[in-house]
Length: 80
Image (cartoon, rainbow, N blue to C red; front, top):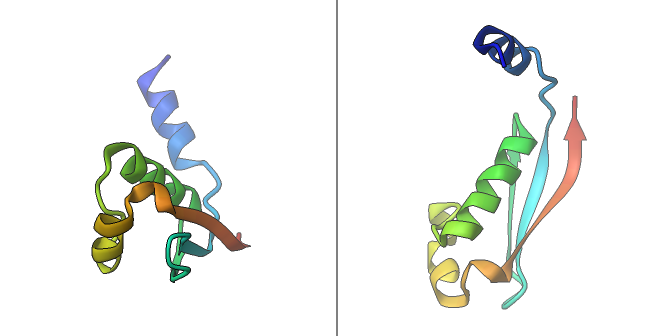
């Protein structure tokens, strides 16, 4: 594919923000946050799960104790 076209497609994509919750199913605690690009946050969460790296420093203690597989990502609201 043409590099310029890929760049233009990326820049013209529709960005959707929103509010999301990360729930630790091991202890029921949750982390509530917002993002200007909710899709990017979902991708970051998936990458953190696959690599075992912590998604956010505020979750580090529970992330290490319960493991990345104990967390669920849920989109609560989308804002266009």
